[in-house]
Amino acid sequence: MIVCVAVVGHQNNPLYIQSFTEADDDLKLHHIVHCSLDVVDERVNNPKRSGSTLNETFLGLLYPTENYKVYGYLTNTKVKFMLVTTDLDVRDADVRNFFRRFHSAYVDAVSNPFHVPGKKITSRTFAERVSNIVKSFRLNPSG
Amino acid sequence: MIGVGKIKQYTNVLEKPISKGKQEVSLSAFAFLFSELVQYNQTHVDNISELERRLEDAGYAVGARVLELLCHREKGNRRETRLLGILSFVHSTVWKVLFGKVADSLEKGTEHEDEYMISEKELLVNRFISIPKDMGTFNCGAFVAGIVRGVLDGAGFPAVVTAHFVPMEGQQRPRTTILIKFAEEVLQREARLG
Image (tube, rainbow over all chains, first blue to last red):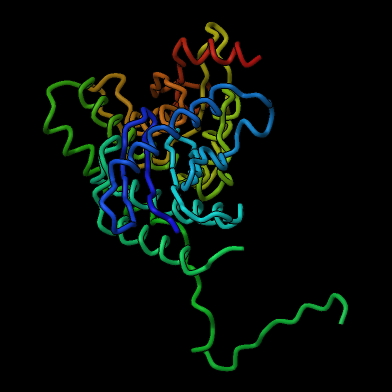
């Protein structure tokens, strides 16, 4: 089950955080997302392997805690997408698919001429699309 | 059946799939809009350099969005980390999507290490514009320079981008050159990456 998605700008400023659980632990989820940012920076700035992996957008599993898993995705403009989920076995392909659709929604939100780059994303359409994507991810249990 | 392509015949015209339509905007519509943009800015500023700066800022916003869109749509989400990579991306992909063709040429500057030039015989945005003599060296290509700056800035290659007219012998209208001067940190990073 996806509990939270987040969009973080290139200066690690939050652009959009949305949690999908009924429980009121937003702060804990923000904290988890914040900690995962360190892992992203580490992956981006210390290329252990050179070559094609330097350019990959999907970063994979970043930060497994006791009941959450965090996946990361980096776009061309250093904007990061984070996905916090409680599923124990999610397929890689599903997460990639999720991020692809999420990226599509993000590009549409940013193309809005009234959106100021660097400020929070306030578009209601974006919020609706994201919750649709999250719902359809939930209905396809993997594994 | 081996190798024979079957063309589906639609007996009823209502059953044909709806075409995606041309992914192009009419040039005259854009020319009107751009001329209105220039005129509006002209009435709000006092001097030429301010006008150029405003056009460039307008282009910057376009460039930032174009980068996001193109990376998602065309490039298959690969991130450019090398100088030549991002330059050839701007020169071919961005130009193709915005103007329908690749830029005429991409050159490296001879005097300075950090200068690159994209030249075009005539910029699309300048097609219906003629600059009056008293405006000196003003070039509406500042809008395109702003777009290039937006793309480079978003991709992590800060640069100063300007548009210039370069007179050529044997041709009536001068060519336009977009001059890109990269910041120091870009060159250092490029040298580090080897």
